[in-house]
Length: 276
Image 1 (cartoon, rainbow, N blue to C red):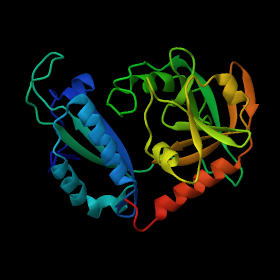
Image 2 (tube, helix red, strand yellow):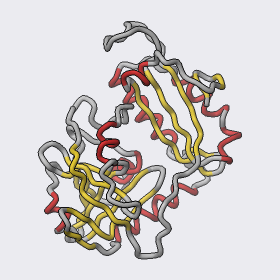
Image 3 (cartoon, rainbow, N blue to C red):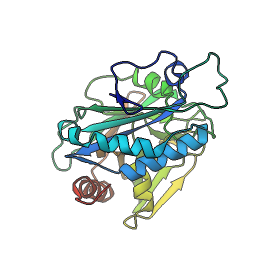
């Protein structure tokens, strides 16, 4: 672990990231010595720091990431955590604080081994996302919504839980973004009041390969009427959904062309020699 560029085994107990979740983070996939989508992760990190008013030295951060590059081949994930810093008690931060920069390396989590045409099982979480437009999109340190929803996991074979907002509309997975297709068109839920603007979600939206409509108020019924669903995450990839379980009922899907193409795009990005 590097803390502000120095090897450390502990962090300051007065750090506001630990005390209040006052910060942002990114989880970056490593392929060999290359951090995949690094420029996009750093861009989202900057947006999060600007939103929260964190004084992060990005020049130092990028140098610290480079200093770890020799160790990247032994791991699969780089986690970048920025907190407001240490010091003081109470919610109100001091006017001048230097952000704490923490870098850690991790193995890739165990993932399902799917055959061609297979998909993953998902369910609908009862726990609903908190809504705060000021925090929507950024990846802040307070992940209690996802922690609480993940406690509902019915069995190890379930891959993901879909989360709704306070009005009951589908937003995202606990650790992924959601896309659904119907009648040849591709859609994804809007993230106006909650949810994380995922790196690969944004890349798909910006890609000329797809014409994607961002939809507000996506109902569960819309997913049940869809021809295909897939999930995406910049670390774990693209996952076609084979079944959606809710209220004791199961709805089945086939792996469609949109998911197949998105999987191909992710694979190309993962192994591109010149990708960031």
